[in-house]
Amino acid sequence: MSNQQQIHVTPVGDTLIVRQGEAAEIYQYSGFKYTANSTDSLIALVKSKGIQENCVIAYDEKGFKVILNDRVIDREQDRITYNFKHSLQYKEWERILTNAVTFDQKNFIDFLRRREEGEIIEPDRLMAAVQNFKYVTNIAGDFTYDDNNNYTFAIKVGEAETTVRLPQMIFANMEFFNESGFVQCIEIEIEVYKPKGDGEKPAFKLTCPKYSRYMENAVAFEIEKVKTELKDYLIVAGNI
Image (cartoon, rainbow, N blue to C red; front, top):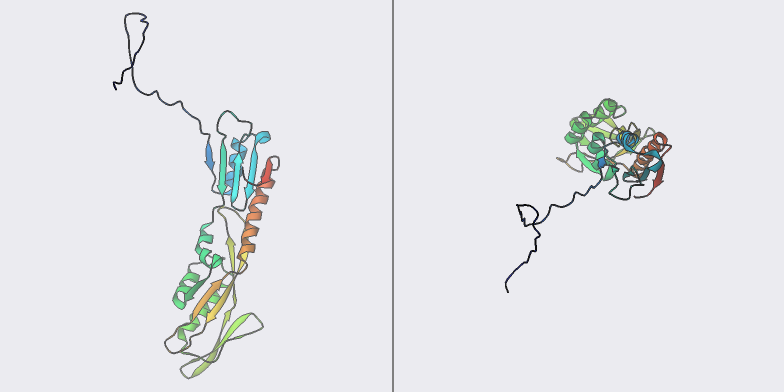
């Protein structure tokens, strides 16, 4: 079968131009898509780009979504998204917070040394207690708990006997979200694994049983900040 095409032309003037091919697609405006990296950035974008009476802000436990003008129906709407972004400090603690981490003595000391000033409450006392285990050649008997929430170990170094006290809890000041400004005092529990024989070394397991509560507090603070700063805007729980 031959592929033939008939074109009927009514000439106007002395020049006839025939073009073949597909025409360029008509430009489709997809709307501006803004991505915020903190709650303060989200608030600044809404105030700068949003039309207050037509703006809709929705939130859930993952972050915020914003339609800057919901009256737009003839094209894609301009939007802002902020999925809660964790701080660098949170990322350094994340495995401990969300799961559990067991350190040997050296790695535990290194972790403590890398903390910022004021991040851990009474860091010198904790560091000294952990370092004292470096000189233990024999831990006599099982550890006990005292009235000050400490582990008390009876140890023997050579012929000398003494005790080592290690707190059962670390208290860390932590900001969960980037540029949040909301710092919580986090309880990190320490569980000590005592050596069971010659050549074995002690280990320290760190966990955060109250993690879900702390995360809920951090999310609630961010939501309340947006509600306060954008009190004249429509703010709803949900997804848009």
